[in-house]
Image 1 (cartoon, rainbow, N blue to C red):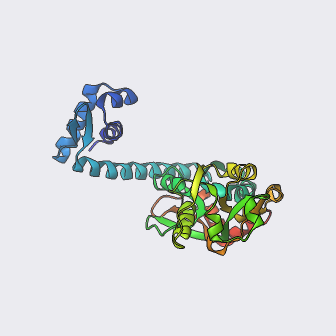
Image 2: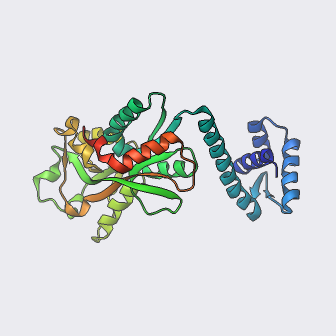
Image 3: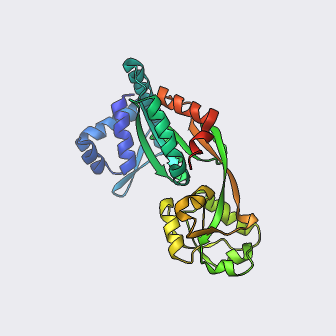
Length: 300
């Protein structure tokens, strides 16, 4: 099996169209057809079936696509490991961090890393936890820092610290003028992240467990940095890390809505792929976070 044929196969599978794949790969359609024929002959099985103008994977093709991606990820990791070893350099860290943690962790962490490894290169990605886990699993990120989710056998995860997510509102919100309980929360509309995010699923379930409908979401936003401004300017409720609420800039405009049933205790953790190559720089960072991760929150 030729790795170049495998690359062509993945592009054809992704586009579902031989012509589009040819444009992306800068190859002729006959050349791609011959590439697929070579793969099918070596495997003794059909990889695609035609449906109208498009082509779709057979079951064998789908299996090859999954295994092919794993193989290419392994090759990329091997190439990177050899380069790091040959260059004797500490290398690059592609780090993902949840938006709720980024402001309170990354400045101190990156400052410490650069002080001890001046040649280190950092590629930082800020996003919601579901997107970060997908990027880590696909090899686009070396490590992620986000609230701990369900155990994943494909990841190695190390707790850093405990924090809480709480319901928040503008300081002059009418909810503070009467008794506050989970029933009162259900009377107002919300701004929340998408339902693939763990904190959104948790708050939805907190309401359902009390025989209440899930919060009515008027604005769905995955940009956590936007939430405090939205909440301060509207009558919407939201759900965010307590660290964000108590930071100096928001103390006068936002307030916690104190309801025990909607206070979420969670563990912030650093995760890496269980069987992936870790560059020396990534190993250094993970070890720092494992042994004394709380220190990087001390200046919040």
